[in-house]
Length: 199
View 1 (tube, one colour):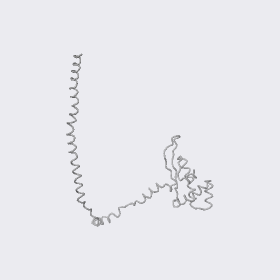
View 2: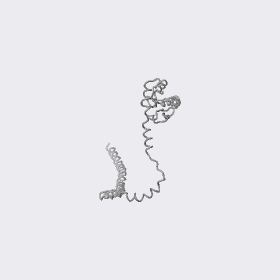
View 3: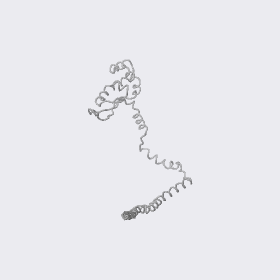
View 4: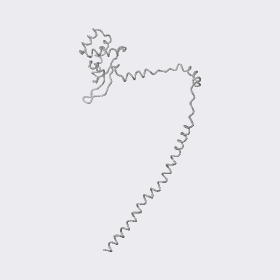
């Protein structure tokens, strides 16, 4: 698992295994900071893998050179479906690019104290006087805003007119079919009576 962690920089495993792996791999990473034959042989005795030793003494040791310890991070993911074991990622801290970017952004923000507040108050009138004056809007912009306001004011009135004009027509349209049916029914009865007399 230590070789896999060094080669892949992040592996998924159970929390118990990750905690044991942390104890196993962090001293090896510390040894890799000083690249000499003895340290390479000691690390190879633990890892038994040429590629992982090469990766550890090459790429990993350069990234962790300034870090005094704590080279790995465990991120819990929840429980596994089959046996309900706690699952996690264990990763090398210096190789997670998203967290490094977030840390750099957070470090870039400066913290402001209140000690310089009196000096800032004295400089405030000068800063206000030096501030650029906002430009007045052009005549075209003023006309466009006025036209838009007129349209907005006229919109509710136009909607009310449309509703009032359409409402009586709809009511008349609904009543009309009922009147047609009543007039048609007697006509059919008369026609049947006439047919009966003829027969």
